[in-house]
Image 1 (spheres, rainbow, N blue to C red):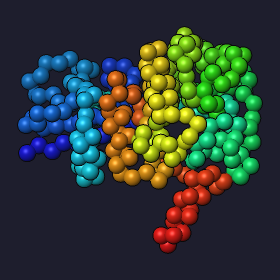
Image 2 (image 1 turned 90 degrees about the vertical axis):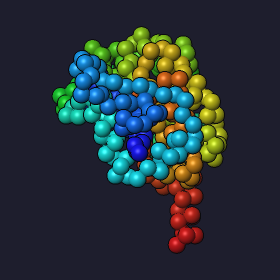
Image 3 (image 1 turned 180 degrees about the horizontal axis):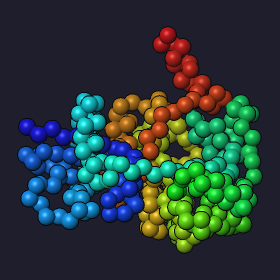
Length: 302
């Protein structure tokens, strides 16, 4: 009987037929399987090199994702490597550099985040103004000299519509300047409207990061100032503008295994899978509500 394994992974390489951070929920199977979206190419296959045989699925059930989630670790690692090698050159790695162009002062109440203005007094995070274009480009030049081919801009905003047009226009000029250096550019700017997504595309943005953080069931215990549907709408706006989507979550938010499975299911059933799926492990920041909650829970267990 063939064994199946799903891998939700962020590839740091390039696809053999061009730049790609493929990271959909991928399934490897043996020849006897009847349900997957990646088939190992048989020896007699005449598909030209550089055109991996991949079939993507968006109709996963929660039960299927649950079975994949509980796959034994070493089997998961083995088959994830097979998927990666089928789709990418395993010898290639892309170096990226991330710069916070606007730190602190965010009006959202994400209970894990030190950037929130809601608990800036207890975290000690001071809000800074949006950086100037030339200062950002100088950082990008140094990143390129150090070997990075992608430069990422992060701003502690609720979203692009939260700030005035002059600040957003400044970010657009940053993106154009990074492109002029011959580098890819990505950004994480919070919620993004359809109109602003198209402006980002016109400026030359390569990818946009907007994580779902956790399952839709657990989401309201972590954030109350926006809805899960708001995040999904931003992902749709970014996709519709033709920008690559970077979307994943955070482990360690007090979620259950069912919450993790639900998050994976949401990602796997999006109209188009994210090209990149970051899976982060929470490092609790002193002064945030979640850090205090986790510390209290650990004390009670101890």
